[in-house]
Image 1 (cartoon, helix red, strand yellow):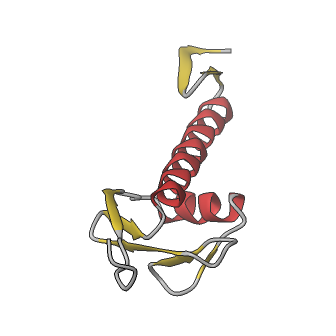
Image 2 (cartoon, rainbow, N blue to C red):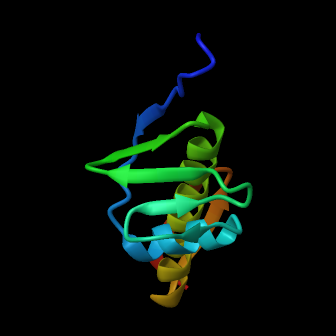
Image 3 (cartoon, rainbow, N blue to C red):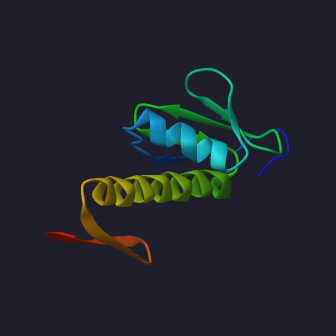
Length: 101
């Protein structure tokens, strides 16, 4: 690849819950610079647009997706416990006992 070209990577990323997205970004030590642009700790950017995440660093996009999933998982666990259900995290899944404790 010629040195005057920049390669961008896009992947599907449908972050439908803005609060979870903001928590995920914060948990990584990153920040929003605008409504749909995220800046990493190294200054790289990730653009979110129409269900896609685009960056020159694919690994950073994957980190964001993992952090978003973890945030959603933790929120689901907390909501179940708040409603009196027994919930347990098993790896990247949540097991919820539908009998209230």
